[in-house]
Image (cartoon, rainbow, N blue to C red; front, side, top):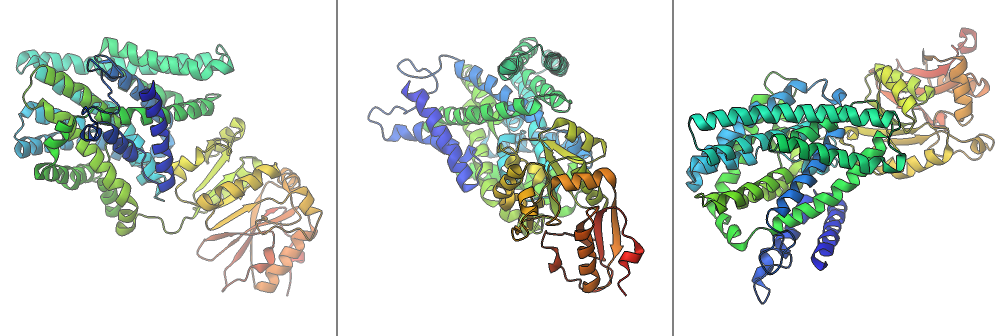
Length: 613
């Protein structure tokens, strides 16, 4: 009981440390696992581990292969949650690159790392290629926390995010085929077995994932599942899909849950966000437990196998040669720039799937007496820990070095997706600004998407927005909801992360009626609250532009908008097309040169009223 409680407590402490110091949680989790596992044997009186994952006759948490069953089920939940976050719209520009990364990149890693392991460690070809198959994967649980702390172009973030999730089942598939090769033997018997296994994994993985996704969606839409049971029923469905698919084809369960997650994530499904929040919380707990268990399961003798220059050479070849080579071959002919390819080639941390399957296959082959099998688990853990440590500590610096770090975040995050917000967002998008709308009202989000706008269904009181790597380039925040408390909360919570260049909110009714209460974050006009703006949108749903002659002309137009409730100033537009948000205290604007425009909402300004000469 003490060990079980200790794992959970230590895991959550590691997660907090990771959040506090902005590093991937996998790093402190593995270090804690090593401390309570193999390293602890150097200090305890009887040479035992503080946490023994597998029952050894006197102590241990899991009997036999129980640990690996638990690991497999936990990975299925983690990958399903990852699949839920994959949206087709994210890859409109980089879909071919992602496809090549999980095909060409996989081939490069498989053969490159296999050859390197064979000649550096003198392992058999079978063991070498099993090792290379296991390190094909780049874990989403590691990449996401790295990317969320680095403002990058959306396409770069999308490539790394999608690759990290989609390549996990592919890596597992290749590892299974190599394992079968070792088990069955080469020749016609293996060829037949491999083809059958490959076909079964693809067939059952996609079929089970697609079918159960639609079945669960149907049950949710028809209200066959009560709200309080939705999360646990969904969890049960994920485990059922994983287990059933795995029964028909070994290791096809990973593919099945990713497909299931992707299908559900791209449906117009009620309560999807609640489901995602639950799965995210569960994933955090499972990841915390898994990495400590798997790291603690390593023996001190395993660590001694890899503390040498051969390991350093193998690590360097995989990270600095094979990974970049795979990325550049995969991105050839794409829209990605050279520095963006260089950054993607630098960021390739391995994660939980590699560690979990390595522990399982390594142990099985050691029991069979396969020569060199003892190297599998420690070598894979060396790659996992090394790549995580490297990327966690250098990714931000490397992004700045190669010029992919967004030093000026020009994206605009709009809280609320009402008709007012959609009208403003549509104008900004047409003027080449990256705009994202956030609303917990699915109907508003759907209307925004039908206009071709980027919109997310989310509750701003949750922490999921801060983890969304698609919002990395947000530099401006506009709170446009009809709820003053929500607008104020959005400013307080997200100003630092999404509003570094400016965070604004609509004034409320009390502030409109009190001329002396003009908040510095007030938006557009001190005389226009949400109700007044929506009334203007209802009567005049159009955004206009008017040329500015000078500062005096601008001030007179602002005075005009204060007198006429059907005209609301929104932005100033520079000759080069750049747009600045007008705050409620809007007379501070000083045009620098000719060609500036005032952007306003409502009825068109009468030329006679505009005549200031």
